[in-house]
Amino acid sequence: MIIDASEALYQQKRMPGLCAVNPTAYMQYGEKAYLLPRDDVTWKNYVDQWLHLSKAAGEYQQALGEWLAVPTQL
Image (cartoon, rainbow, N blue to C red):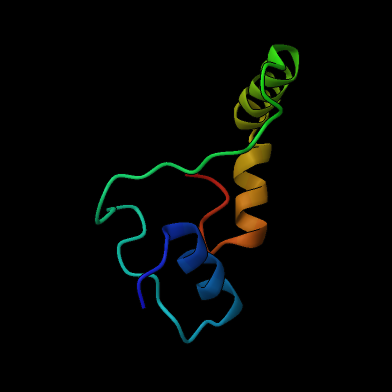
């Protein structure tokens, strides 16, 4: 089965009998995206700042650890 890395890690956490192979060595380049309202720069800046602060405080990695089979600290 070929799926994106986040889905593979999620399924590995749900079903320990599965193993995500090379989830950090991508087969091809790709980005995920969030859809935001068009032309709402204020909201985009808010989301960007929230994400920046969440990553800096370790909250983002902690949330990943709750959902995906990844260590909480890299």
